[in-house]
Image (cartoon, rainbow, N blue to C red; front, side, top):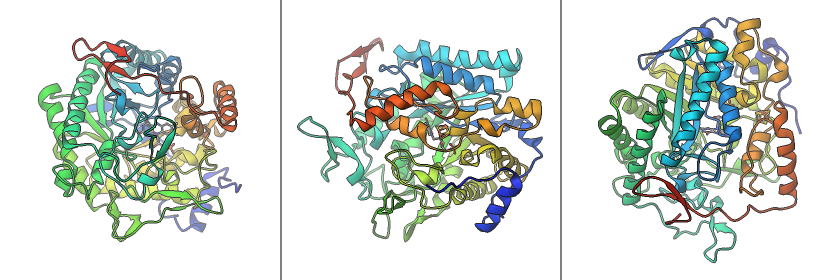
Length: 508
Ligand SMILES: Cc1cc2nc3c(=O)[nH]c(=O)nc-3n(C[C@H](O)[C@H](O)[C@H](O)COP(=O)(O)O)c2cc1C
Ligand code: SF4
């Protein structure tokens, strides 16, 4: 396996960027002062420009409540010192969860979610002072997993590239098969019900006291797939207006039925690119496709491996007009073209080797996010794709923020590995290279490991957080032994009356 990241200093990184032809995009700066300056988001002061991206640990309880490890992670994030913590995916319905241990917001999980948020804030106060939460922003990422819902895919459209690799339950009830062409697509009424679920969830988020609601429109989950539904007939497909109908309705109803004041953010895919698969040499390559390509958002239909930001810019203008205050810029699909979204050193066991130098992937993040930020300088945007840069991410974050190419820099895997880097930055003026994420994808492997009694292993940083070593070994042994996930837990549905979750009632 090639060792891609081999840089000790910014000078090494700059030399590599020059060699790869991306020196105008990947730059470094050791003046970190602006990173530590406050920024205004939706009228709120946020204490610094360093953010933690949503990072789920697949460690909730089967009924959607946070589990012991969820509390541990949120406290570590609260303690760390980033002033914008973009909370992880929280499903709006049980059937919309991406895995059996994803958080799910309903009346039965509210008390524990309230404690989760309070524990994070308490840790933040304990470390940073009694008043520290006044400039801390914590968001709740509401999600409907759509095609990647764990009980069965709930698709907004058929996609000739993704369908053959989207597994559905075997009609005979044993195992899974590739999605057949007649697999049902969510109806317009199903989407209206999803809208209602978002509104019910948003009410709960406000009740919990989160600082903002994120309406997740990335990584090809439901709202993201809808943006690409060029071929779907009816009111939710075809034109840009139709493809954004659901998100527009949700935001309008949050404002009219939930709260006039709650801050709204959105993590958006500014481009989906095309799905990839493992080639004969082990490296990723695009799955066969035809042009004009009609199944992705933010791509040139004749060259869908290339981003076209025309519609993503339209989307940002629309969200801005609807009162969205902050955007988290992401792209691609973690299940099918992971190297775009999270440039990596080493793939997870079932993945492909990166088809390009990961620094080119990082440069793509910086370039596309920079273009979006510069088109909307008044809209605070958070950039993604920094973690592969290990300890040097902070120098790149400083360069991007100092040059106005992004308002805030966020880390995902980097926060699993090293949640308290801000503490070191503030106290020593630098961050520790020994604690940085090394992008070897063990956390992704854990996310994909299903062979235990929960049907899902918890995820965390294996190399840098000793806690996860034994969990990883267990997961790998289960994988090698070919352990299938245990049968899915029986459906847990919310009672229409009191909202008390009841196991085994109703449909999945
Ligand atoms: C284990 C794991 C969990 C993640 N959970 C979420 C999530 O809940 N919501 C989300 O939008 N992205 C999620 N992501 C994607 C990250 O937020 C981030 O976009 C990605 O890791 C690239 O950023 P990085 O290079 O800083 O890691 C997850 C990624 C990983 C590896
Ligand atoms: S397991 Fe740790 S080091 Fe590896 S990619 Fe995940 S966060 Fe980074």
